[in-house]
Length: 375
Ligand code: NAD
Image 1 (spheres, helix red, strand yellow):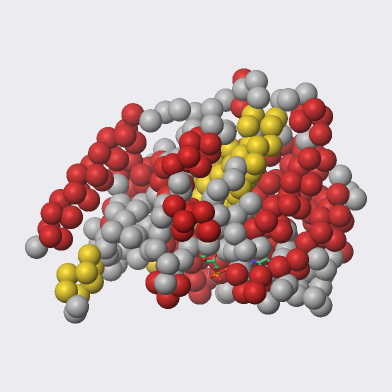
Image 2 (cartoon, rainbow, N blue to C red):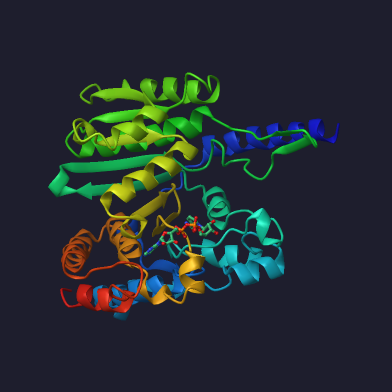
């Protein structure tokens, strides 16, 4: 009955996490920060290919701030799958220490070994970083003006099915059980972030997405709390949907442009935002922000695409995703004009360079050259 002790430990840890959440209020004021340190992590697979292009663009866009030391682009080494396996650590302690010295991070995708890979069963680096840096909001915009689509997804990033993803229990050869966690503070802060965004952007509609009819305790709580937070925003129209019908709504051209801001627990957010990115033109086009009170991490929404590397076509990876993430990062630190400049250049390159992900299209470098030509 070892698993009963494990379960007691899990409950104690979650109670302690809730207590920490209650006292954390370390917001950074970037306007008052003498030097903003941006940690850059290359990642695995196609990560180094696309991050190299993002660095070229940022070096040009921020050349004055880099020269005057107002901003530093700092390479963070060691978050590679080789080093993580060698050290048998999801995020090695010395790497985490370096990361915590930065204000924000721009991160390439990192590989998570699967059971079939026959290597130590280390957890996703992202899940660990989100937890360690308490990056509770995963914000993913999807914008397709010609289809009248302007969506922003607020995915809860630290709880749900992912909080204890590698802590499930194999009770016997016949039974396995995983855990899902919803907390009051964890839900209220993601709901508040989404409603604040909706309010400051002209009271956009907010849609809450759950499976509260089945997951009654966790999703039921999430749904109730989102409606509680909504009471502070009486001018915002709110509705709620089950995740299965929302997956259908996004491909329903009759109604999908009525949606604006979405609030979702972790797993549904993961799935629905990939679907939304596909509608925009593929995961290679979408960036995302992982935001907490103290830290923030910006990245592509896709993974390390190891098959593109083994097929020898990594150079054809689309860097739009990490460039979009760079744009979000610039907005986060208050560099709105530079972010707008990057957005215009990125739209220009997307309209003029055909990215297919193989040798029938353009390379990442050619795409970034096109972006740079407009900066
Ligand atoms: P993936 O997103 O890496 O790749 C799926 C497919 O999408 C690729 O085969 C490729 O055809 C295409 N693709 C992805 N990015 C592209 C780009 N920039 N340009 C052109 N085409 C692109 O998904 P996967 O194969 O499921 O995952 C691979 C690895 O990445 C796994 O180890 C997974 O755990 C990890 N992963 C990491 C992150 C992250 O670090 N944020 C996110 C998702 C997955």
